[in-house]
Length: 397
Image 1: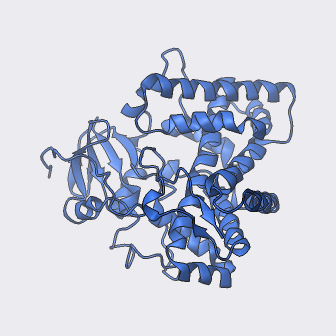
Image 2 (image 1 turned 45 degrees about the vertical axis):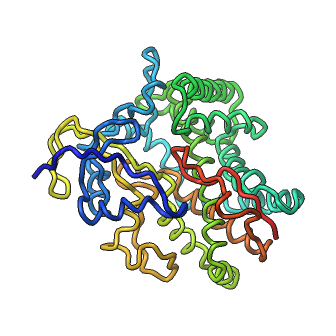
């Protein structure tokens, strides 16, 4: 069956900053596949049930090969290179295959000692900053930034440069020329890095990619390598930094959870998985384009129609999770949707998990009396960004 065009817009109004807009729960129960107007006024199908979200993300007939309306200002006609997250198989497979081996569980375990050292160093920095210090500035943001810089071979001394442009790129409402400028600067920065690594190769990921590319049937161009580097750089620090900050707020709301974590830090992985599920920082969903007529959840989606799947709504589906709004580290483990699903599932998910696990366990061990040092209503949440989080989080201990 088909439903009439809805006049409601995609839900964005939160009652609780750590929960999705309540309208998602109503839609999931009453109209799990329905038409709405998205954040840029584009008519789109909104999908909110866990099973339907997985069905869309796992079906290659729903294409990623497009420039979303909110990013059309970034595409220059003379630039033939798309981010590989905007490619479909088999083109997407070419990029994915070259990178998969770098992000296996085994490879990430090799990084753990270095990550632990970085975390302890940043805890020292946070302590030196003193009472009222910003946890984002001194801890949550530097850790994944340092890790991805070391991994890629990017000088961390350039962090203010790429962090500012990453922020502009991910700002929800911004002038098209500003977003385009940020994207071009990041691409050009990574292109400079590619040229440098060609001249002066080292042991970092970008140099390994250049070497691996030379052996491929269809080697990567320098622009393609720069596009890979740009995606890894932006995604590699923005997402994890936001999750560390948000998870800290969420745990501090429940002191019994903090005490339980401190008493049994070996369970930190369960806390991280629940935080990833509940906080779902890709809060505006994931967009796809139907390449043929496809039925989802009893609704016929026509070829050429937009679809947005809500990871937030799917992650709190009561058909999948008992008491879905509770942080329950003892619940039966069911794969959440926060890293996506299907061919485009997040490549760096194991790295993000390890960074969060090490950072959060160490934070609450070092500062057992940690608290947010400002009223709850004054915490600046990232409602204005495409990736949710906190802009700042002043803490004391």
